Image (cartoon, rainbow, N blue to C red):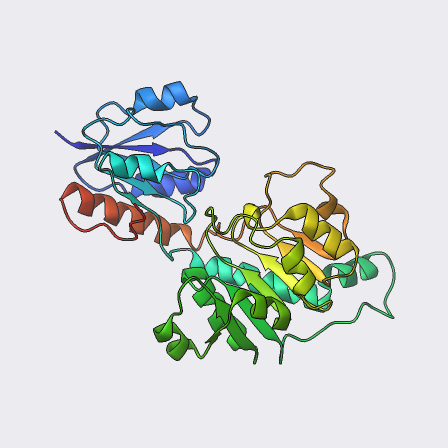
Length: 317
């Protein structure tokens, strides 16, 4: 008898193919439709040993839905805010995410947003496409700036390494000081208020939790420098979007690069989309054909270990 893994299908055929090709011997892979109803998802759990997939668009399960056979929920994402981790923990079912498997690609995307905003690349490209040339919007350097990172996990660490290569000063804030990371990277800790007031670039790289929801609101934005830019590659809920739109429109901060929004996709009338000093990308930072093989390999390794009664990496519950 083989072990049964139920995987929620991705809207990306190449990723589904990677998952299928990586299936270990002795494991049966069954697919769950990406748009399956909660009732269909619950019915598909019967006899399942491992549940895999990304659930950022909603978690269809509740207490009592999980079969006795279920030994692991393996996420194919770093975010886990939609998953009912507490209920799974109460049922004795561990939950794991992908750790830092896509941290480098998220950090690169954050750097791209930072550079595009500072260099005013969209405005310069539009100028030339419209038949213009000079004078052009001025391009600012990243060199010599202070980059503040909120959250020094896998993504924050990768971002710090890249920012330091541009001859910047990097400071961070987190719930706990990370002395080993400070020494290894050459970064310094600061409380959030000080980070807001002193950063030329503020990057958000924290998971969304009750503590981080609305972390950056009107009061926090008011502390930032008028020349500062905000980059969010975490989750939209970390930022108070109406407050951010007001701050950007009023010149309280210079710009924002957002890979995530509170509602995705955004409504056409979202005021952030109409502002010339805002770059919005479609929650694409962590999605790269270069990163997916790492993600899938890590996930299947965790599945094999869990089925054998071994250690589970990147456990969050």
